[in-house]
Each structure stands twice: as structure tokens, then as C-alpha cells.
Image 1 (cartoon, rainbow, N blue to C red):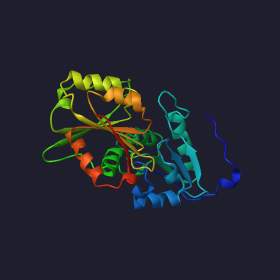
Image 2: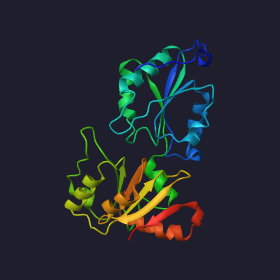
Image 3: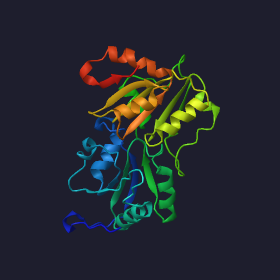
Image 4: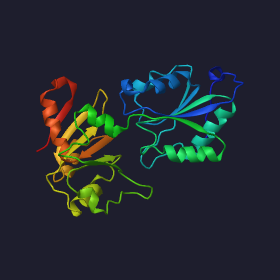
Length: 270
């Protein structure tokens, strides 16, 4: 993979470069941490993912070199080795390099893998955590992920694994009073639905489908396990979409009734 940069964007550096692995949060620029914003403004080069909102990108200096290295399902324009080589290239030139990730880099963001591989080529990283999508999206619509009566535990689940569809062959996912959060799950949603039903989850279990969580164009759809697939087929939510599964979702209706209609775009599927 080749990339070309205009000479006018290149600054001469003498000091040794460094790498920051930064979590950008779920999308709302106001949910960036103060430290993340500080580093973004001081950086020379930023490699960012597709999940980074335009609202956040607008806060980056026009003098900063920005490279979109994001991946889509079954389409990776930049392979991981290309990303490491780009980082190494700029670090050796003495640049402050930011690897900007949506949400938190250590929760389904491949942050651990990237640190390991950068260490192998002699590059260390500093970490700035971000608000993960589950926390940000749930808070934006008034759903507590834990609740003394409705959710004594919470489980974050990736919608796919390295070999493909997620494997939920464990009764623990269907137990009562537990909140399940599915990230990046739209491609394998039918498989997830079938597995949850197979392992005993109640068909009336409420589910919140959150598209573009915390952003201006956020959309929330409430359904249940029985109607999940029909709801998905009708509404066709687009990435990024998060699923919250569990009795805590019922609290959302009370939240909406006390919130101005213009604050949240939502629809209910009985």
C-alpha cells in the first residue's frame, strides 16, 4: 500500500517521535476526554478509524496529517502491517503519532493487538482510554446497564470473532437479570438471535437497537427477542449499531416519557 503526502504538510523534527493510542468515545465530540482532545491538538499525524465521527475530526488542526485506515466488513484497504509501517515511518522521523480509535481502544478495538505488534518493531505506546460505545449509548437513552432488580451483571460481546460468527454456546448468556451488549453485530444478527433462543432466553426479553449512538442522527428502536429479526429487516439499521439485551431496556420508556421529543429519534416495535 502506497501513500503520498504533500511536502508542505511535513515538519522537520529532531526529537524522538512517540505514539498515542487514543479512545475517541462513541461519537459525540463532547464525550472526548480532556486528555484525548489535548493530544489530538498536539499531534503531527493521526491514523483514524471509520467509526470516528466528523464532529470529532473537525477538532483536529488542518496542519495535522490525517490518514483514514478504517476497515469495513470483508474490506480492509489498509492491512494491519501497512498501519504499523506507516506509524513506524513517522515515529522514526520524530513525529507525534496518534492511533485514534472509536470508543475505547481496549474494548473490541484491537488495541491490545496493535500494542503487541508495535512493541515487536520497537515502538512503545501511551494509552488514553475512551468511553466505550456500550456506556455512552446506554447513558444517552437512559438505560442503566446494571440495576439491583433487573441487571446484576453485564456482559460485552463482539458480534463476530476472528473466524466469523460469534459462538454463544454457553447457558450463561441466557440467564435472567443479566444485561448483554452486542457490538458490531448486524452481519451475524440472525445467528445471534437463534443462539439466544436455543439456549433458553425468554422470547419477551426486551432489546434496544441503537444506531449512531450519542450522535445527532442517533436512532433508537425497541423490540424483543421474538421480533428481533423482523424488526431488523424492516428498519435496516446501519453501522455503527449496538444491541442492548435485557430487562433494563424497559426503563427506556420511562426515560423517553420525561424527555423532550426532539432530543431522541425513536420508534417502538411491540
